[in-house]
Length: 319
Image 1 (tube, rainbow, N blue to C red):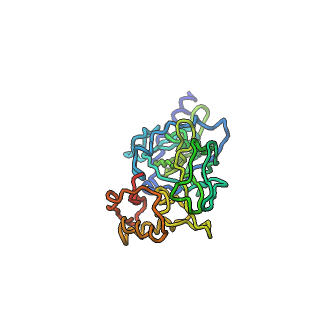
Image 2: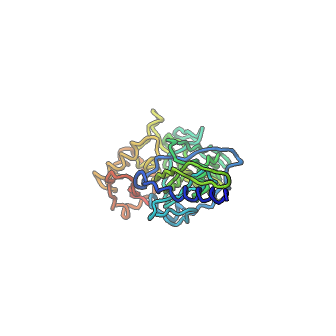
Image 3: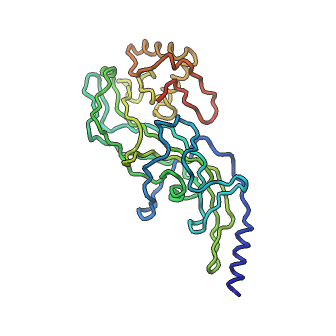
């Protein structure tokens, strides 16, 4: 009799938990970069077989092809957590990808005329740091419910094949760098207070928040996914990058370069002169041929950014 009353009380408590409205609409850019370590015993199976392939999905495009572990119920406005997961849950709604900040190879700087090659076996550690730590739930819960892994992968990018310096860059200074593919997961996180009376347990005072979190994409063999490229710099000031026509097209993507003026100069020049004239003007100024094979006929439809939130690929290139 006493047990029946306890179970009835627990059921009433669970049914009385109201759905909490979301803080805001789902964000379109990631302000939370997930990185955490809770110990090997808590780390889930490494998810290397990613459902989002940058070779098949356009950059910064919402992708709904990753089947979520737990679905968000729009009618009830819920992402109901379970008490046995610490009253925490994540309902993934969509994913997308873009390029992350460059990670230069150590001791890879070059002077004009020098042999500057990446050799087989050269490696560089990948460190993906938080810009904030405001997620409503723990990273291990995000990894459990998402198709991606948000733990610190402790990865390193290894050069798998010999890479000579681009011929067009033999008379420039520069360095080699790695640009990772970042996977973004957007959805609803929820967290509540765990309650328990004898054999009954439930979650109360549930809060919900819309979030986007990001992680470095991994290949099926566990290697970080991305692009290796040579960056041309000023020989007098190594921190100053040469113009956009001297760089790989991926280096002109948003957030890739440590020097944001490279991308800004590219956007400003194209908006003012158009793709072809902007490129030719840059080449004349640097007295060099562009190292990038650009199809000007297909790139003339460049559309300058409108300054709104998430950008589409506005570089005039198709990676």
